[in-house]
Amino acid sequence: MSLFEEYHPLKGRMFQMLKPDGALHPEMEPPLDDQETFHLYQKMLSIRLADQRALMLQRQGRMGTYAPIWGQEACQVGSAYPLQKRDWVFPAFRELGASLMMGIPLKTVYLYWMGNEEGSRAPEGINVLPVSIPVGTHPLHAVGTAWAAKIRKDDIVTIAYFGDGATSKGDFHEAMNFAGVYKTPTIFFCQNNQYAISVPRKIQTASETIAQKAIAYGMVGIQVDGNDLFAVYAATKEAIERARSGGGSALIEGVTYRFGPHTTADDPTKYRSEEEMEPWKPLDPLVRLRLYLKGRGLWNEEVEKRLTEEAQQEIDQVVKEAEAVPAPEVEDIFKYVYSEMTPQLKEEMEYLKEYFK
Ligand SMILES: Cc1ncc(C[n+]2csc(CCOP(=O)(O)OP(=O)(O)O)c2C)c(N)n1
Image 1 (cartoon, rainbow, N blue to C red):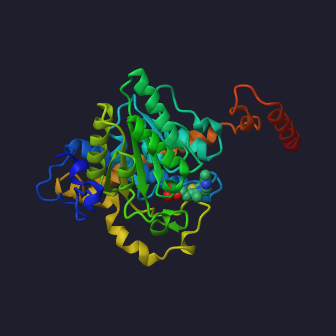
Image 2 (cartoon, protein in one colour):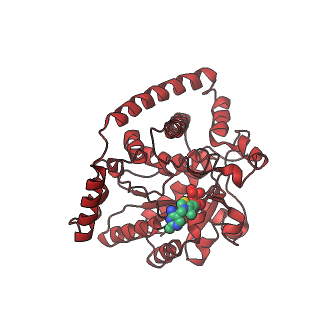
């Protein structure tokens, strides 16, 4: 039986493979071998460290507003890993993990948050769209791209990442509807991190789960433990294979928790308590995978220290390189919207250039 049948949203079951103690559920086989699992743990750890560094840089005035991924590493690493290089990723603004997994350099991500337009440019052959700050608009782009590919008989898959808040946007429903009707090869990956800034999940939608919204649009849906790398990987892999072979779209709800602030401009103590976070702490995706790897004899404090040092050295180098890039020109704010600038844009640009003289 497929995972989408076994965990059909109406059955009210969340798909989990790794228990919080790091052991697999009985009768479940790990979907990844030891080497791959270790490799993905290493990725998750370096993503967390790169995320922490970004927060630090922002606090030191060396980076602009930043949206941390802290806690959502398994959602992004587990779902990006089964994608092929030719597939297309449509991120929101918290997708440090998925972007790095697809081959976006960390320097590019840092440049974006440092306010440099260069940070929106993916290297040739890396199919990751720029950050989408407007909430929920990019699932439409993911569907349009998938639809075009389907017409051209290109067997690519597109994936859109968004939060629970985005599911209240009209754009999300339009995208889901088109995807269902045209059976586009699109994965809708909702990272339900329990909040849309200060709005908690329970008042975001009256639906019991986000996954169940798939039913209304005639596509498959599944709710997975978003802090369980194995569950996220297995469900996304199945969705991708299904989509690639003409089976249409899927909605995956990864149940997770945003440990950090919404962005560095947010103060979460205004709307949630320390006590509320307590039960989530042992469910940290890195902690669980570490326990699993320890059980396999692949992890100990020494290994952690080595991986951390290696990652920190790499990050140090990236920060140096990103900070050495000259500050962008004022013109850059205006230049990239149209191939030819409108008279009004030109006027605004001249005004700002004069202002900064
Ligand atoms: C169209 C639009 N409306 C409002 C905002 C302001 N805003 C930025 S992030 C956000 C909440 C998004 O929540 P969610 O989709 O759950 O993603 P998360 O931030 O939790 O990752 C809002 C309302 C925006 N950026 N775009």
